[in-house]
Image 1: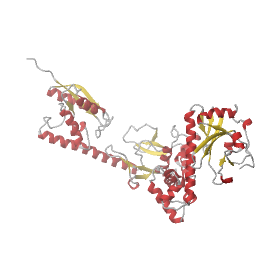
Image 2 (image 1 turned 135 degrees about the horizontal axis):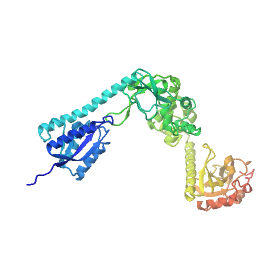
Image 3 (image 1 turned 30 degrees about the vertical axis):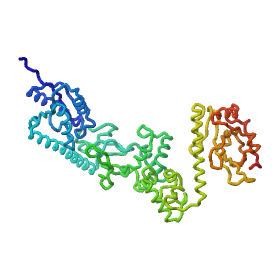
Image 4 (image 1 turned 90 degrees about the vertical axis):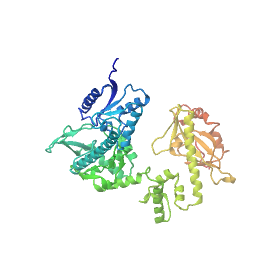
Length: 528
């Protein structure tokens, strides 16, 4: 009778860090000895080099093993592992037992080669495996506590325990005897465990830039986005990358610039979520370099950041500040709110609640009834203005481009890159001659240099018609009232039956010139 050959099995090996150079070869030697003693032949290897056993998330070897077992693609009869800790140091021992059960339930049992108990599924072996799983998880927890205590002692002694230093600071390598060995660049690590790392000042340009950032925030009241745009416009970079709002905030919130070593501001246990710790639990010591920012400047910057923290301020916090201002002053205006130190600024309330009147209503501040109508009309006018620009861009994606002369000026359009067109929304006056309400045309100096697209509104502030005017004279009044049957308006304005005729009429009015001097008209001085 022909004897059967060795039983095919798979092996799973793991080591926690890359420093454990001989860990995997040693595990494989023990596994192969176990295989030879029990008539097994290792036909496949699953490995997780440099992977922690606390989580399965980043362990591709174990994940592929379980996938092959569940899918039925495994061409082996058992899985050999060095010991229970190599299978995993899960904080919940039931997780390790779960993965073991998945394999056993598929007919592929797990054998632990270096353990004292046998792999026969008896009560004794099951009990020992449960104890070993708990011990493996407890070892990982205790090791984390020991590592934390060791790093905490380093920080209290004035050394740096982090990796990448804050902007403007460098890592200086110190030997065991206290001699300086050189500055570590980004990505470099020390090669001797007896060496230590301290923080030192970086180059002078970065130091000056840090002080300027704090000054812009604390004294000029600029937010992080404004500071980032200013630095980028002047050609400054953050370690070769453009400045962003987050990078500016990272600088402004770094207490190291006060001449301190600060560590453990966040906590992450067992590869779980990272959480911010209370300030009193931070590990802090005096650093070995002179402070870059004094305490007064740092405190003013933190106070300014609190006022700029729009995204994180809840509606209740915003309204509570407004209630305090109302209680102190008896009334509310934008000037009073902006001067107050307990509120967040009128602009924040407008962005969060839509208008100041809505914020006033929520805190119980009484306002004149007419203000609601004015505010609603202004809101409708702005919405219509934006919808006109968007509609024209969608109708003429290649011909129309929306731009502006400067960030604080109103937008205008460029047609074919040659003709500039301003959009003006004309609402009706509340008072007019002979019981009729005229439209009010309000133009800026920039508008009067461009072709003007007029959108007339009805009494309910809805779009009534669209007209195009040639550029107006610079000497005309910025405000002008006109009626629909005014001779000046009927002779000068070109009515658009639909916005789809916009580009065609603009080209006719432009006459081949951006400035269009021959097309300029004047509003009658005595009109309106």
